[in-house]
Image 1 (cartoon, rainbow, N blue to C red):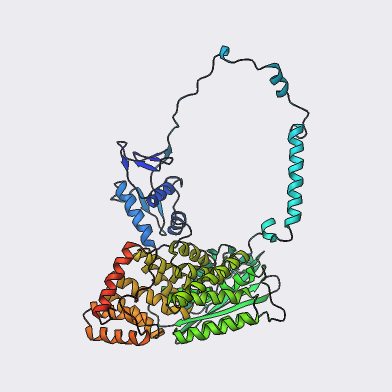
Image 2: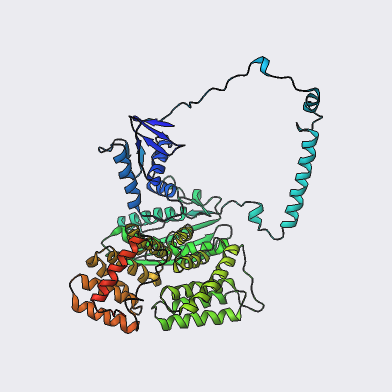
Length: 572
């Protein structure tokens, strides 16, 4: 029991009580946040710390955090914000003394002397301590020795099949982030480089299987990188250059022991970008996304995949990249070409798990776009499920495996599970726009439209990978439409179609947005284009699969479909 400002927080009963002892109703998430504040010892809790603790393994927007803060202030009568205070830097704290209430309970009665019976002589003899070794009785010593032998024999048998990491936990590799080099003669460039360095450090610090050494600024005239690089396994170094038209960030990961360059990535943004924070975000995401994936490949290479005899170790990567490149402008024809390419690569190298995972991920896109017949979809799902289960056992921390599993769960309408898996993918690549898109999609179907919109907008700020840009643009437009904000949906849908004009579904949503915005002629034109791309679409089959969708989502989709019908979508 904790007490503060006249309130009681009963941790055992998960209950907040007011000064009169009256229970105050709180949602579970709001109660958990209050518990964190009350047990933090007056420490400032950052937004990130609060979100990770209250919503573990689930990506949520700051709106969810703010809602809990508002509910807490209302419950505590804290209209003047004197209890739950916003600290400098954006965190929050409970600004009052918290004390633990003394435990209360009936004291145990001490038995009277005449109630304590003397044990029988046999029990006394049995209770006498036997000869002990290291403080253990003879029987305990024998049992301990036997148990130790069993453990040793078990490890000896299991050692050939267990990964070393399971027997001896390794220290996470250390990545030293060096200060990004900028033009010292250009104050704006120097400031930009410092901000980019900080953002890269923060981003890589979120990756769960590495530890990050932040850059230290040395004393004047000293070496500004020596202290940071000491004892690190890898180093991240880079340069920021400014031209008349663009900012360009080039960064690389270097193996510290050998100075071998592991990966080099570059990203550019327009120099005249009015939003400096957006420019910084896209520069950092542009290089961070590529470097994080490469680092993940390096760390996962300790669990090598089986390779068919005579197969090329690099052939799988080429096949996957070519297949993905062929569907940048997503159409049914390009999807078929990419699928055939991966199927051919897998037939040449049937034990190649990386190609099998890429094929499963691609086919899940086909299911999401309804490019398989119902019978084909069942067979595809079964094969993909078997492939991904095997892949997760072999490479549980692989970004491509987690992405494919997330897409599988989303395509098969297991939205809560997809949120957890996508959040794990983000824990290895915080700038992963594809994972953010799938998280946003899950939030849409769960009826959490505000969270979904924030997620899609975050993906747009990162804009990585560019090949997936149309997905989160479409997601944001779709969410605005489901919220009834059709005017705001238009620019997002238009941008999505400009990137990928061949999906059909985008045009149907655009038609609905035009229709509800009073632009009926444009609505008719968009609908005709959608029907040209997806002939046979009617009111009955225009919606994506809705199994497990929330009632809020189902009702919103019905309103959008009615707008599509009003724009010319056939009823049957």
